[in-house]
Length: 210
Image 1 (tube, one colour):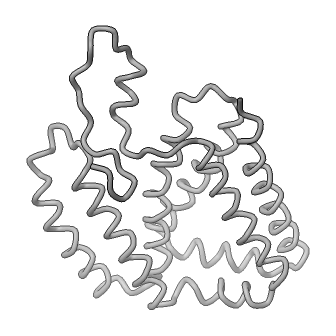
Image 2 (cartoon, one colour):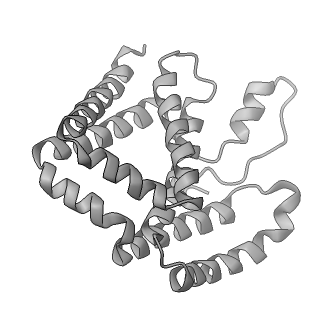
């Protein structure tokens, strides 16, 4: 299946000369190249942290309001729900394939119940869900690639995932992190500059690949 960047259900029938690498590649869900992942993650870092440098007051005010924003929470929750629905529809579930229909039916129900009854820090929880979902294609892009520089992306993604798990289960942690970051101007500027520098590094790395 080609839509939404998914490869569809993998084919487990391997030819006689197929090896573990071809099997691993057949199990991948997304078709995202490492070079593309590095570029777009780097661009995201440069743009977001560049805005934090150029418009610190605007970005700080937006960040402080973000955790309790119902509109942002609804948008992010909807994005996570649609992504998860498509993912369940196209990926191979193995021995749980007979649960596919049930999960597909339950996804919009879970979306509605979450929106209706989990109002507290909904934006933070939904952001955590999206970060966890986004981690899969980014890690897949680096999987089986020989370049050691892939670890710049892999390390960043795992850090994001760890934070995201806390945001889903303990959403007030993001509020506290935002408060800590915005409390000190030097800390803010250092974080913004570091983000821009890391983003530039990620965007440059694909140029070093043969």
